[in-house]
Length: 429
Image 1 (tube, rainbow, N blue to C red):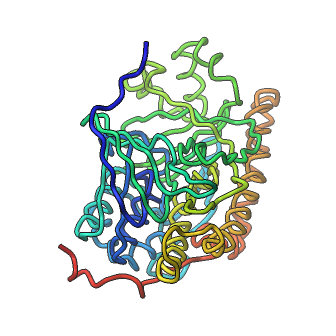
Image 2: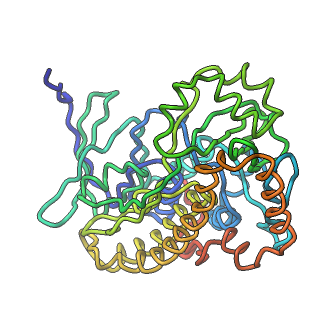
Image 3: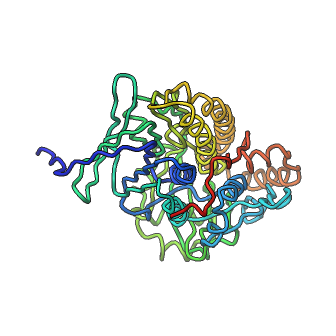
């Protein structure tokens, strides 16, 4: 059966089009709008109320939000402040990192759902005449002339409309399965991983601490408190084993999770009744070999697929766009017409080394964790319990190097918003 083409066609001209209204796209959209740049932000989904996997926002991002002038609004949203991080090993808690021990005022992280945060950023950007947000509009291809990207082709399915957007720069901020990256012929550069994460939600009352990793008989369990109502939990499993987990049945899954956290025994039968309530997250990190072309820039997961190890994804993406904003503004002011790849070099020269450092850390951290998940069942519980408790007891009593804590809080190369380009908010609509 042939596809039906949209009956309406629209052409738009703008300075910058951003594809993807995740944290990276929304932050960049606000920064450019407040800098007076004609900006169109496209989001394929009609609603922001969709599944996100990144809930942690590190102290650096709080500082960025403050420099953007939106932190006060962000803190009015439902959130949890994370001041200390611990691991629970066979019902004994071992502290790993204290953010509160660092100098203030940003000596905590935030746990929060993404949709309300993204809405705050979109609403803030929409106060400027230069900004346009089009939800329910999927970028389908890049518009090219020779070796130059001159725009995007998009479809607004709700209004049966085909849209051509011509611009000076396309920014791909559309995540790990980026349409923009694929259309540009750029390989995501994924690294091999032996783990996957099985995610599900339970009532917030199931966890006492906002961020916690629990270790027990059948592996580890990650939990994130998301406010008064919900908690997100993730169970690392061996890559490719999910079909077997499903075949064993939901009851067997309950038993394995209870073996890690006995307090879930009465909760799981009531709130996790079907595998349709679960989702599988692939862990493979990656770094694309190319982040920029003539008229094109990739940011966030489109440029470098984040691993959930260490909760760095949101921070890496937002740091990207803080640097990209400054580079784009310089390019717009110093050139006419399409922004060439060479003019965007400074963005990549700043961000690629920092991203490589984070990915190296994530891959190193994953190896022992992967070994535990894969071979943990081979070691008798009577040996495994005292061994792991001794290991984490030693870790908890060895001061975490300040450099490691600071890298988690601020990233390998901390960034700041170039506020010299930002208009006073009195110039809003």
